[in-house]
Length: 182
Image 1 (cartoon, helix red, strand yellow):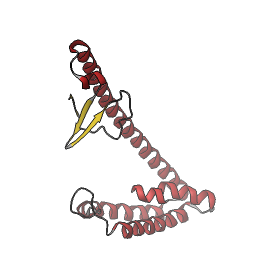
Image 2 (cartoon, one colour; image 1 turned 60 degrees about the vertical axis):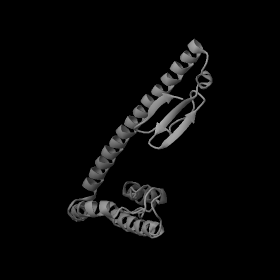
Image 3 (cartoon, rainbow, N blue to C red; image 1 turned 90 degrees about the horizontal axis):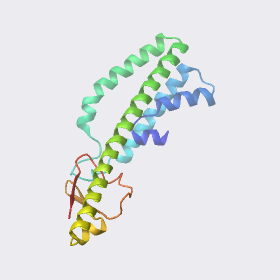
């Protein structure tokens, strides 16, 4: 639960099945308890981050502009959910929640695969740059950095020197990476 709240997903898709399995609650009861635990977790998380500042700019960690945009849709969804919880039988609610959880899991998997593919493309760009630098060093014999396979990855204002081919670069490869020799 704490991990779900910290990651920002609330945890309803996790809490409801656990409450039904371990505490023998019916679907409607589990949904009500889940809503309360999500509210409590959100309030505690807000209290913890209330005085924290954004690491890159002079602002709070809470993006109030985003909350102003999302709040109306969240309220509409909550009111609709309460209406369906009252109106529909438990078996229909379970089926709908299972379909929703499956859909969200599939979308998360697609997004993860997309991110992995983008990172792999960046890795290949870095590897090919390393190979071309080594080839240039072998042909010219004068550039000491190229002989060692040293390349520079520039990401905005940050510069990262990479000296070992095949090292783990997942935390250093971003969307706008320019690869060049030093």
